[in-house]
Image 1 (cartoon, rainbow, N blue to C red):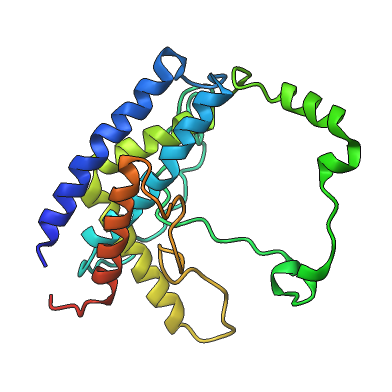
Image 2 (image 1 turned 180 degrees about the vertical axis):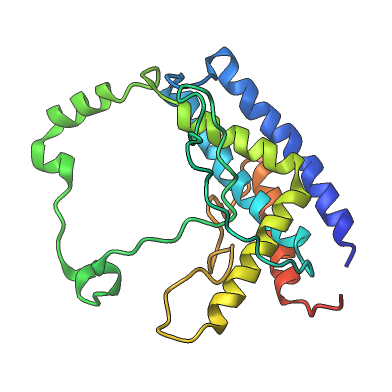
Length: 230
């Protein structure tokens, strides 16, 4: 398998997608207090989630065969503030892990499907449904500060794929070390990718990012299952 070609091809495909997301926000992107119309916010999220999933899988591919030792944790020097400027924009590190799936008790209850559920809007009538729809206007401004940070985090991680691969390799080293310790087992993540389909996956490709995610997901599974020949 030509892994460098797989990485380059999909990195090149993600770059214009991310650029288009920044363009969608235009001048509205900024620091704390940034707002976007609800319709634009939803359109960005529609592409951002699968783009994040695709990048996570590219990191898995880039980290294949990479073995590093965990970094020693160093305490923060006494008297040094954690952040010099609380109002400054701080882009968080890109999340290496898929968000876990959340299940309700009904998902495991065989009789749950037989319970009749009353729709929220049908209970209150049509008038309430119309008024609720009017509140959620497509042009209603919504807080986009966290969305802006996620987008910046995605862009920065894509430009530093080798650094993200080293982060993942160090996490794997910490995981393997924790598994060797004696004592009661503590629940932990075993893989950066959650079982099943990735977040943002769509069966029908309706955007260019869908094809990128499909390809990255396939090759990430190949990379995780292939024997290590390093």
